[in-house]
Length: 211
Image (cartoon, rainbow, N blue to C red):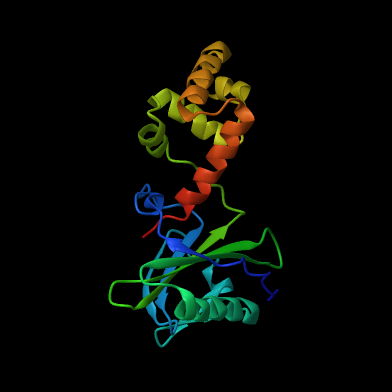
């Protein structure tokens, strides 16, 4: 199997509140696996198990990575957390594992010491070949959007244009432009490009949620 890329520089700090209050919807193409400092499996939650054997297997309760590079990167992060992370601090690292076909898998690693000093790691695997749909409920609660505005924002995040949405829904483009203006105002973005950039970041947050 192709080897993974370089690990990101670990960052230490308290877990942000945003990481504690995310939408609970499961995302297609994402897998979340929890393990300890010895890679002993704690929990696994997933919505699509088609591609996870490309990254790891579980043998006698131990998470074993198929790529030696991925194994080394995870071990390095665990050692760094054991040596440097203060109590209740969080280490984060993001790296890619190429595949023979298709876009690479993105591996997001979160390592944290819990109250009893135990090290807990959460590895999220994102399949970039899978389409993610931003939760309209999340948009409503985060930015006080109406249901119609949230539906439009989610469609824009999916890559649709106002004309695409108009053809699909039968809503006039002029009405959609009014809704877009309201969305820009409520989200504090001045242009549609800024809005899409914001929504793309929210997609990563939502896809990363499973704990």
